[in-house]
Each structure stands twice: as C-alpha cells, then as structure tokens.
Image 1 (cartoon, rainbow, N blue to C red):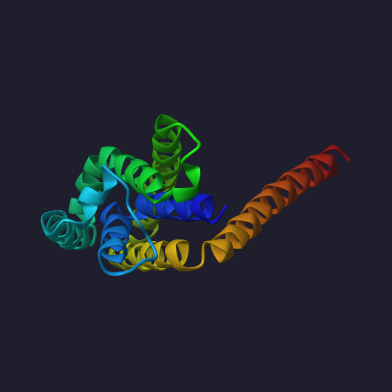
Image 2 (image 1 turned 180 degrees about the vertical axis):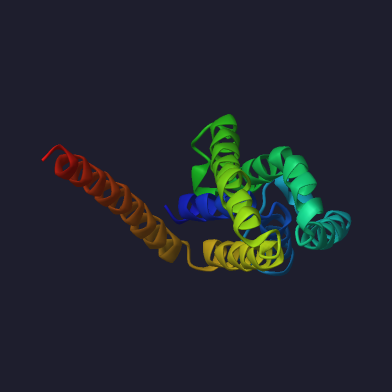
Length: 192
C-alpha cells in the first residue's frame, strides 16, 4: 500500500515540476535504500541521468519564473510533466508489481497531467491576470517547494501522504457541496 501512496504522490509532484520528483527518486535510489529501482528504471541512478536532471531542473527553475517565458515553458511541459509522472509512478511503485506496467504508466500520466492541467489552465492564468504577471515568480517558487516536499514525503512517509490525499479529497468534496448548496439557496431566495 505504501508503494501506491508513494507513486501517487510522486506523480502528482511531477505535475507541478517534472524534474524535482525524478531527481529525488534518482538521488534516493543512488544513495539510500529507501528506493530500489528495478530494470529499466535503474538507469535513473546513472550519473549522466542525474546530471541531466540537475541541468533540466535549473532550466525549469528559471524559465518558470519569468512571466512571458513561463507560458512557453508550460506549453512544452504539457508533454513533459505527464511523461515524468508516468515514469516516477512506474519506477517508484514497488508494490504495484502485480499490476501491468502499462496501467502504472497510464495512472502516472493521468495524475501528473491532471495536476499540470489545473496549474497551467486555471491557477497560472488567474495569477497572471490578477497580478499582471508580478505574482508568477512567487507562485512558481511555491510550486517548486510543494513539489519538493511532496516528493520527499512520498518517499519517506507515504502513509502520511495517503492521509493528506484523503483529507484533501474530503475537503474538495465538502467545498463543492457547500458551493452547490449556497447556489441553490440563492436561487430559492430569488424565487421567493
């Protein structure tokens, strides 16, 4: 069960920043016993891959902080982030060995793609519109911090992540239920 929580957390993290969870998984697999990557994912522990992930992380960090450039970056990342989510889901899901690898890849792709779509399609345009682009660097830094913390929690204490996911899901359901009830109450008040 922990492997599933870990895989979900890492793929969600990849929806915010493609390279942070890949780098964390690579480094933890290289230097600790917390993650063991089987073939073909063990290639992620290569110094070449780790170096490439560091370079891509730096590029992503700076590209995402510049208001005009971040839109181009989000377009490029529309393909990269879901792919990264698929990779970290499949690579980190030790407990999912009974599930077909295509299903693991698809789950990671959908999770990271959904997070990225929410970020690039709703959050970022709202921040840009309300702040004239001035809030972009701050939101981007917050996304990087959340991606890093989420990735670390997903590896170290995935059960906590599972609890957080359930709590967040319950909050989302409550929020939309409450919003719908307020809307119905307003409509009822207008009719009276």
